[in-house]
Image (cartoon, rainbow, N blue to C red; front, side):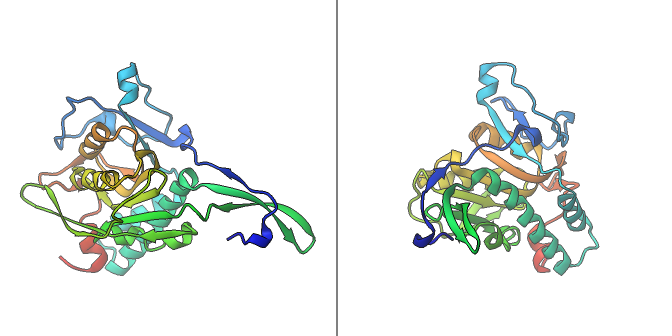
Amino acid sequence: MPSPSMVRSGVRSGSCRPSPRNLTRFRVSSSSSSSSSSSSSWAPKLVGLCRATSKEDARMQMAVYVPPHPLVKHFMSIARNKDTPSAAFRSAMAELGRLLLYECAKDLLQTVDFEVETPCGVAEATFVDPSKPVTVVPVLRAGLVLVEQAHLVFPISRTCHLGYVRDEETLEASMYLDRLPKQFTSDDLVVIADPMVATGGTAINVVRDVLDRGADIKNVRLVCAVCAPPALTKLGEEFPELIMYSAMIDPELNDKGYIVPGLGDAGDRAYGTE
């Protein structure tokens, strides 16, 4: 953290969008189906972008960043394994969350440039802007495991909880806990964490909750461990400017709305409940 004694000159630099190298963009139309059937066009791809063929397509693109990192694959594999004990599952998800938040930080955090005195002279220094804390929004309860190490990634942050529960019959999500601030500003940086983005219902509600209180979609990020085509279709239709970070994109849902192959119920597995 820079102190006043360190400052000789300050130049603030803004955030930028992620490099196209590891982005997967999805073209979404208003007629897209939210069914659980799989499609080869939704297969996880880490190469380049799906180019829009028209101006309308270009406006309806949501960026999904899938980090091609060996540690992301390692911890995802531990989490997927049905024989992984609860404690090990939770640890793997926490590590996965840390890596995804790290990738998210490169795009989101703003910095301030200073000069500092070292024991041997003066050096240029760059710090995370202390006036721009990150609001971390875990979706309870499973979202907690993804942000256990958020304080290690974001030097300045606050955590505001949202609780949603999904009706297993209708697959509709309803809120049971709201600890968001009464108001955001358009400059506030917000990171939403939800391990499983399957049908998209909960994620859409949470993003709406944040935007309805004044946040700007350009400063909102959605982080998850696994997502699926129906959710990406709905999110892309609702929020084409949203940027999302996911460890994996799985091909389909089963008839209960669970991601396949997925990793099961993240909350139950993390906390040893059924």
